[in-house]
Image (cartoon, rainbow, N blue to C red; front, side, top):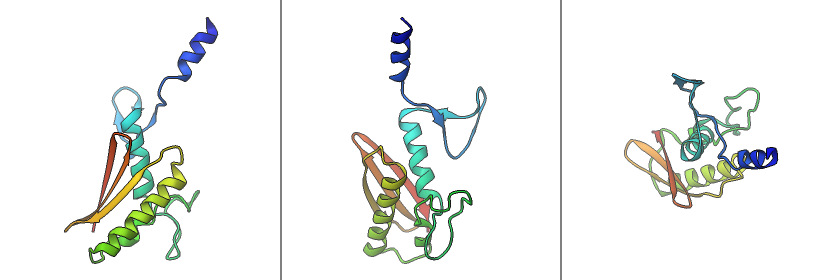
Length: 130
């Protein structure tokens, strides 16, 4: 019976802290599973300033972590910028969340750069102010 219980526990979806960190009235920091957790991971990667030729990353203990999308802010919105954002987002997500295969799209709006990632029937979207 103990083996059945251990096997059942291994099939439960993973639970982890949501990012950005938020307070939860019950567990101190909010945690989640499924869609919430995947969205938190994607946003963490895309919105963290990664190591680029223009400077080191924002996380001193892991400077390479992130996407480099911050370098695209305050630029003219055109097809080239959108494609560059799509490629940077795709590469960062492949590197830092390899367990999830994502299709990445990007486009520029008047006030934001939008990156949309899709996996199966789930869609995740991040907007970065320009």
